[in-house]
Image (cartoon, rainbow, N blue to C red; front, side, top):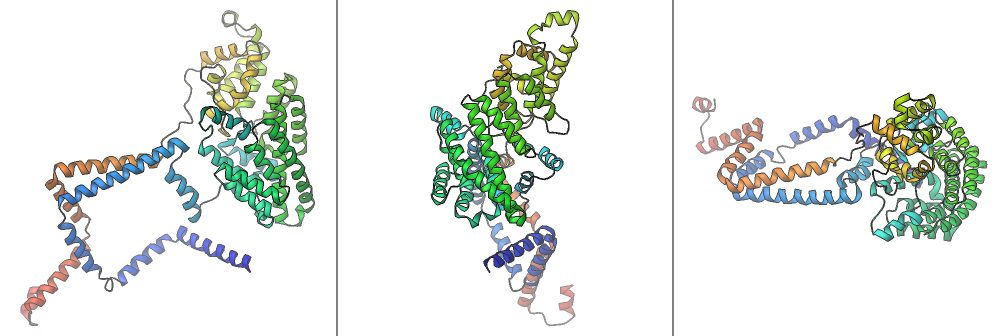
Amino acid sequence: MAEAGAGFLEQLKSCVVWSWTYLWTVWFFLVLFLVYILRVPLKLNDNWSSVSMFLNTLTPKFYVALTGTSSLISGLILIFEWWYFRKYGTSFIEQVSVSHLRPLLGGVDNNSSNNSNSSNGDSDSNRQSVSECKVWRNPLNLFRGAEYNRYTWVTGREPLTYYDMNLSAQDHQTFFTCDSDHLRPADAIMQKAWRERNPQARISAAHEALEINECATAYILLAEEEATTIAEAEKLFKQALKAGDGCYRRSQQLQHHGSQYEAQHRRDTNVLVYIKRRLAMCARRLGRTREAVKMMRDLMKEFPLLSMFNIHENLLEALLELQAYADVQAVLAKYDDISLPKSATICYTAALLKARAVSDKFSPEAASRRGLSTAEMNAVEAIHRAVEFNPHVPKYLLEMKSLILPPEHILKRGDSEAIAYAFFHLAHWKRVEGALNLLHCTWEGTFHEVSVYPKKELPFFILFTAGLCSFTAMLALLTHQFPELMGVFAKAMIDIFCSAEVRDWNCKSTFMCFEDELDFPPGPQSQHFQN
């Protein structure tokens, strides 16, 4: 009965949303018709006359107070919007409208497209949907508790923006939850925990879920946010692997029994892949690089269609650390394809391998005298291709710009992707003798101006409130300095905005009152006066 009632409410809500979306003109004219029908009981003519009389008797002091108050309120909104933007990187009004008002008005949830990416469906459609995304999860993202929080302990500043953490929360809800979580108490608790903004509340919820049973996603949260060292995180991920592997095997046997079991199996698959990938990253951080490479290769063989995690970029970085350049070239041959979405890791790693063949003997003076050889031309073209894809990377590799901690999400071809790439790959470029020199000569001689995309612009509501505050402040100043002139201007504006129909109604009502006072008898004089 409860499910039937909930379904009826959802259908009713969808009908109302549809009516507001497509039949808003009908609603508008219906409201106008009701106002017209009820104009006599509501005494609209008399009320409008009273309002007009009240507005005409206002003094200039009122307008000074009105404009001054408006300027003060808009200024306070502007200050709050600017503070919120500086702290969290987004507009508060925009965030509230997107998070709360948009779903009520029938907005489309972008997470639904992400859910389709996590399925083991057709690889071509999966790649096409992924390539349309602009913001990607950083495949080499750090651990919050063991790495990001160390920066907070030392500097007292937050290394991640609110926007970045909000995107991570959406990813966690997409990958680690499903519609049937409410049937299992521990998963229901974790479903709320992933939506929680306070880190301590998330950690407490994870411990609460573990008191019920062995919950893999609870171990994931604790490994990511509570563990203060990579060794502690690895220990928790191993516990998560034990719990997640059991859930995956059970759901694998039941996935064909219905859509609910299929969604649960998809979720368990995402959890298992995430755990194994993070375990491989833990091994890489702890210096067990060969073990990490083996784990990544096994994971890519076991789940070949799950390319959304970009595990091959983790594999490339680990192979470069081992200086296994032949294996790196084999991975690039598989993933550096025109049908696959490019990345700075793929483009610049390909350029590094080409540069490695000639960089140790490369000399700009000698090349200018004799010209470029075939191998040098291939290296220069590879660097051109990489810089054209992301022109921000060379300044970080050449240490012309200082590095910061990479974000959890990156924008392809943007500065955030350049930071994430250089943070992990700068050491690999330094290890190849002459590679940075070749990059510097090629980049400096060909690319003079680096694009500023993506440029961070001020939100619309900050500009709007700034304009509103300035306009109302100017009105308040003019009204204070020239009260009589501004009073005339305000009354003129009121007369302009008064509709002709309402003024006609006022004239008719005034004439009727005047006729009642004169008490004309019915006759030709009365008819002549009315005409």
